[in-house]
Length: 81
Image (cartoon, rainbow, N blue to C red; front, side):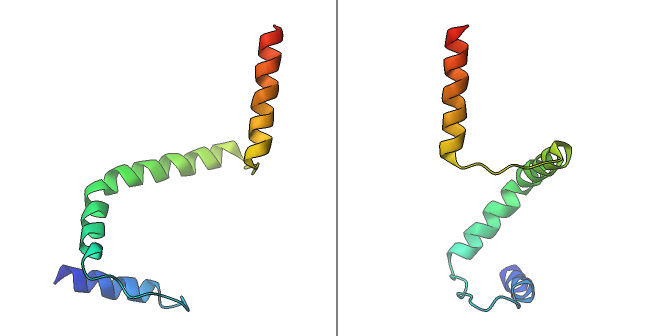
């Protein structure tokens, strides 16, 4: 069965994980079907995201308060002009 093969492959990939819950018997089939159905879209997104990160050359993590403060200042500056 295809699901058994996928379980074995995932077991090999997750062998290093110390804490792992067993796969649920019903939802894993649904998850695999969704993954297979949407894989081209997922792959395009990941390629676009990786390209964005590589061209940015720098990733700066900011928390939401800094983001909203910056947006508030930009809005105030825009209103002044």
